[in-house]
Image 1 (cartoon, rainbow over the protein chains, first blue to last red):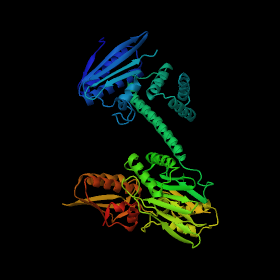
Image 2 (spheres, rainbow over the protein chains, first blue to last red):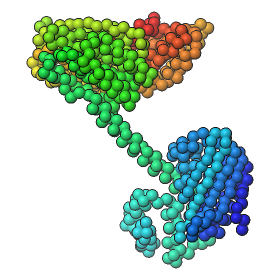
Image 3 (cartoon, each protein chain N blue to C red):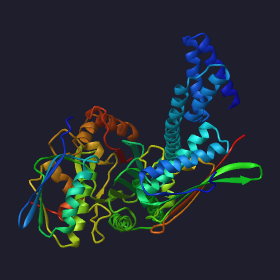
Image 4 (tube, rainbow over the protein chains, first blue to last red):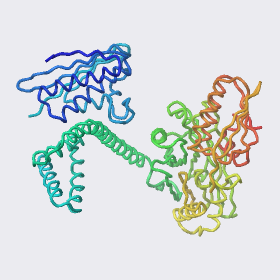
Length: 134
Length: 334
Length: 105
């Protein structure tokens, strides 16, 4: 099993590849159906942001361990235009999805841990983790 | 959470064995608590499927797959729902902040104008068209015995108008020991408003200063409706007006001041344009509404009752459609 | 009480721009007048002639738009005239003192 696949996102089809990779890993780590759906949705949103705004970037999915906790880590990386006002981008109602609940605030809700680094002209890096509940 | 799951299981299984409206109603009530507990739709779907599986109901392969598909769809719905909840909370917070602003604004207004140091009887009424009024009325004691009274209309409603209003109130409070004439007070406020308020804001104001020792009432207007002056002896009306631009537009305006001497029973009425406006008439608005009301009033009654009568007459004329803030202040020499 | 629909029309000529305002100018319609009138007041050096023949009603928000236009005109030394002002509307400009700053033809 490939532990750290880094998927190059360049076109819409790559979003599907990223999703599959995330689902495969989540399944293998023992995440339930619902959590699998949440994780893949989160990957999908991040990959879609890369595709729409940065034109290209990378999605990396890997397992994480902390004590006896098991989780999945998603890293989304691009050198795109970056986000001018990160705080605003994380506010509900400002999301690029136009009030459909998705975008970065959506990803933040789906995952347990979330961090973002971005500034205008400097690209974007998002890291998110979901822990498996026993 | 576990309790809720157990309850869901119970009613659903009951429904499967005995389909009836009763269980569906119970389900409806349950869904309210699921919503209250913020349980996302995808969790409910998973719960539903697990209950079926755990209780021996077999799902054909295609159905199972179709539910996996449905699961993905539910995740997005769940996200949209949570965003909506979060926005509703934000809206509530904003509303409560506005309520705080409204109650703070209410504290800017005086409760009474009557004091021992002057011989005036004052009646007043002010009703906002919406939650926050653009009309302001206030009094200041000038020196030992003089009484200054203002009526103002701040254009541009809501919070910016309220902020401007509080600025005017505090400015007037600093003038307590000042003996500036009425027109200089307008000059002072004009520059204050110009400097501090939003450029889209302007203020109309009528300012009067009464000296009980001489019974002389001086007045000055900044773009405000003329005051109505009633002389008790002759029973005649007169409009009191001075030339002056609305406050907050031009720093170099010179305001005029005029004076009258009041005799016992004489009174003046200050008001805002909402009172005298006649929307469906093509004739220029004048204060005939107030003149009519006064002519039909019992002037032996206290000023407050006469003011109430004027107000009632004005709103009757408009068929109770109040599109603007209404303010009336009547100042009568005892 | 009838509420007339609000409309702003502009007619551009060589040395002047004519703006025609129809209907009720109030809190709801003022933004539309602002959108049309203020950019002209701010940037156009031609004489601005505003015709109010069909202006039925104006409140303080409406007056505010004219005041804002005035201020902008002053900055570029542009001229602004109000034409065919109904008596009812004229009074508002008179009481507010704005008639000393805008020429009412």
